[in-house]
Image 1 (cartoon, rainbow, N blue to C red):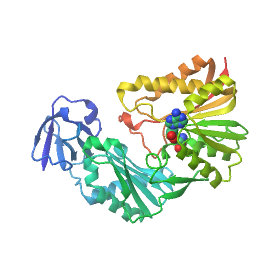
Image 2 (cartoon, protein in one colour):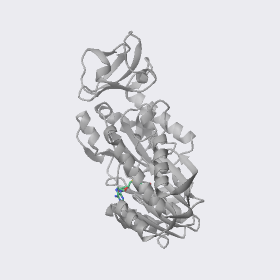
Image 3 (tube, rainbow, N blue to C red):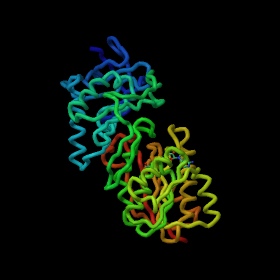
Image 4 (cartoon, protein in one colour):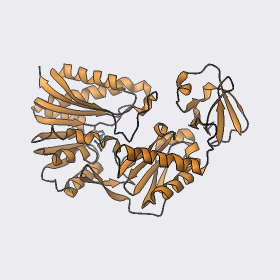
Length: 392
Ligand code: SAH
């Protein structure tokens, strides 16, 4: 067994339960550090810290899988983790669709698995997880007897680990255009070519939060992807709903979803750049009862947080200007680099510049199937806010 010894003086992060060990926190490695192999990690005083996988090619040298000295990392270990994660999702109320494994939050660093009824989409984002992919697939087969398993490893972060980007079947081939049920509605999910794993499960609980404010409303949604929020709005009694997304593909899928739910007379989607259009429409004096914004992460690095804040402020300012006195703004941010306090401050700045008074209705994080583990800042990433907006 290879042993990794940490420096005596390291950040409390590891001690407090965070699974990442950076190369500059390591004093020495005893034994062979074959990329992707399992190693034991010890604190500077020689006490056992945890067991995980090593990759000398990555800045994160080791990611811990367990803190239990007696726990062996083998096929059974992965079966147990997946079965445990599923039991937890069921306990908190998920039945058909959920993020089954949310990486670090499920003590499965760099592994993502989304469950779309009988289909599973997975991402192994580190070499150590890639090594165990067959064990993970086997565990999925044993626990769920699924209709299909697909890998969406076509993501650039894999390259930091020396891994190629790739996607494809991990089970017998199947039709990757599937339909899921959510909150009594149906949605097409394109597992093979959709964004990320095909569908944003992280907003599934928040989509119900608009139920009351959209009744009889004229609704504008921007950054709609496949139209989930907008179709919920129509279902919950909106008078009219217009959804905008820059991607022609997303818009086509969103319009198909409207038809799938028999709501095509109420909701429709157009391919437009929301940044440009919202500005023009505000100038023209267009007004809506409810405006919903769910933009992509404006930053992936700490260096450009300021740019992201400017982006969030600008789009929310434009959105607020389009809202009738006493209407509602439904707004989200999905980057962990902008933490909740900072997001709220940004919305406050936007309201000030738009000369609007805001009253908080709902402030949520991501759906509970993406657990937030306290002390692991990067598991707390999504902000979802509803405010009433009135003239000053
Ligand atoms: N609300 C969606 C998720 C949105 S993801 C859901 O719940 O499923 C963000 C979306 O913003 C993506 O679909 C992307 O195509 C779109 N987007 C990115 N830049 C845009 C722009 N300038 N104007 C409009 N849409 C944009």
